[in-house]
Amino acid sequence: MESPITLEAIAKLVGGTVNGDPARVIDGVGSLESAEAGHITYLTKKAFLPRLQESKASAVLVDQAQAIDKDQVVTANPSVAFAKLLNHFHPLPRPQAGIDERAHIGADVVIGENVSIAPFAYIGDHSRIEDGAVVMSSVHIGERCRVGANSCLHPNVTLYPDSEIGQNVILHAGVVVGADGFGYTLDETGRHYKINQIGRVVIEDDVEVGANSCIDRAGIGVTRIGKGTKIDNLVQVAHNCEVGEHSILAGQVGLAGSCTLGKYVVLAGQSGVSDHVKLGDQVTVAAKSGVFRDIEDGQVWAGSPALPASSWRRYVVQWTRLTDMARKLKEMEARLNGIENENSRQ
Image 1 (spheres, rainbow, N blue to C red):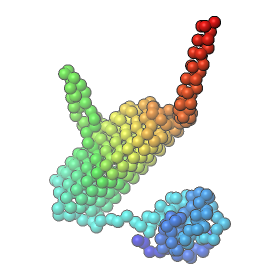
Image 2: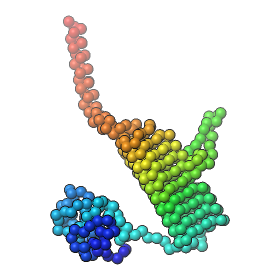
Image 3: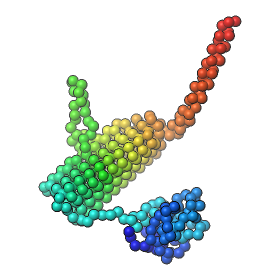
Image 4: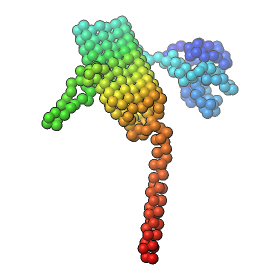
């Protein structure tokens, strides 16, 4: 844990201004409920003001000055500012640089400065591990791979041959990069004939991939994850997909082969995209939705099959009325039958 700092120093760190005592010393961070005296917390909604007033925190990050009896740091985005302070007070632990003698280092491997390679890691021939990278235990890096500077591969990550990982990338435990895409064709007997997958995977800078997610190599060419994209746990990215920069793929999302996602796309949990579908920039897909056709820039879709969210919401309202509508139809049918029977007797 880092040493305490003043509110004035915090304001400089997060790009804000102090409303209160700039010399107040802060020695930690906490939520509105968990913060103690000497801690700083943050406020995102005015609705939480009563909870802030009850909080033990000595200071608070706000987006505009509040009429409360607490020192404040006013900053444009309190959530981002709080994240920076978390990183200050609780920096991620980093293994000591060095190559453990129990690691396997192949032929013609290039290893940069301040690299940490843990016991039982495997690095294949002709691979490159750049400055400051961390390779934890039981990581398998195949032949001709690149791991960029300051990237971190957690235990049991697997990179198939020819995979390329950019700088400042985090791959969590169990991630598999570069496994064969699901490529088969039917032969003359109707059996599945495997199509050799000869492409590769490129993960650009500042990407984070959650535990047990899989990114398949291209059949031919490249499967690419764009700069700054964040992928949650248990996500499947199929062969030849192109995921644009700064996108979000939440837990259990699935992309079929040759999908193209633009920049700043958000796929909520358990949503899926069919093969060869193209999503434009800043598209949002709601949870558990199934997308089967292209979506233009900036749209929000939901449902399965997915529709523009405004249409889907109307349909959902109608679904809740189906039971009542069915009852009324049966009543109308009974009345009509009664009228027809009465007319037939006349």
